[in-house]
Length: 114
Length: 115
Image (cartoon, rainbow over all chains, first blue to last red; front, side):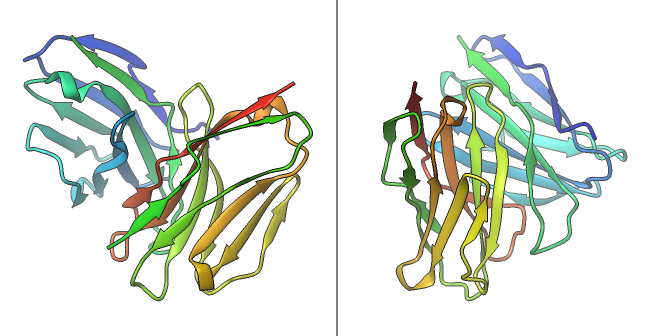
């Protein structure tokens, strides 16, 4: 079974631009979560989507947004990029079983903001 | 509040040595889940284990073993006879009390296994 895939793997943008990252979950998985990983802050939860609805949101500004499509694929958008947005963005998918759920992560998209 | 602490920032061992990675957690919930993930240089977080709070039995999987102790709020991970391929960053994580797919990660422990 194919794992979680993320595109693109690497991205370079300049301040003020916007960016869209894509995540395709494991087949059959209905929940997609996004995390930001930086050397200073570590792994931080951004948001989770299930059934095309945002279920949870972390403490990030409104510049960070996302959506999920009917096939469970998800996109994450960051507008008005700042230097501090440079990070590895990881997507995770799960079956959405509730408390016994396990998240499986993709390889990430490494975003560099110049 | 949920919190995970991995006090060991980086550990270096020589191949075939045993190594233990520490994880201490904080939660007010009575039922909770803990996880370990491995992050090789490629970046992908690889799921290793999930443990719930009402099962304190230690678990062994090949060279990997986990020691869960509620009394000390610890969930330590031991690699026996380490190999170079074990070199990675290891993360301990705690599931949020009410949001099942919101994890709190520790800061990670970078393990260097030298030949």
